[in-house]
Length: 318
Image (cartoon, rainbow, N blue to C red):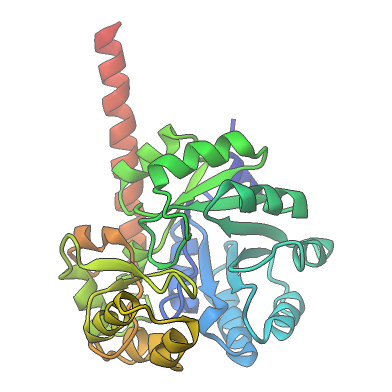
């Protein structure tokens, strides 16, 4: 029986590249799709006209399915939705907002909708809204995160038990071994961010990629829980946020400290001290910048080797 996510999205491998801000342009999305996974354009860092350009270029670069990630709290969300519909995008991954608002509108246009959640409550809301699948994202993930700080190991089986739609695991997954673990927990596919953030085709600044692959254990920290929780690589900006939070800063003070375009400054423009550097805990395991195709194939081969190892172990026990 074909994997439910592969069937839903018409892809070869149950591996999805996360739609990361400032990293996930058309080059990365098309490279992952061409390799057999699902590439996703991250609309969170794009104005509507920029998104339209990336969609058009992605369609020229691949004849395989690809998607667009849209943060539902995006200020230009109406225009973003219009661009997606006008350009004939077939797959949307929504996040950071209420799926009930846009899911039915997108599905009425024949678009497959997957919603990103971090707890059971919102998984059920996504299912009720008509989402075709959910991404269950654990505490280990980069970027915006769940306030509950539930780890992937705990989250995936809880979500799998709660919903009747396919579940895509995310958070701390960047290898075949972690993919195998996610499947053992009940996941139907995996979504991978950090490992693709350092792909050659990623639009992240080279300085950011190099900082990721030089990271070690403990170099990321969840911050800004009074706003939207985000996992950051440690630098001067992250230290300033930590100090402000320790001193009891409120939402308004944190917003002022965050300022505008802080993520762009770090991840896209390469300011490694004053920029906001969003990345997952698995950054400590990433040691090399490689083509997206190689990253995907290595993950898949390691996953298959793990399956064989468990089968051999089972045969030995029998």
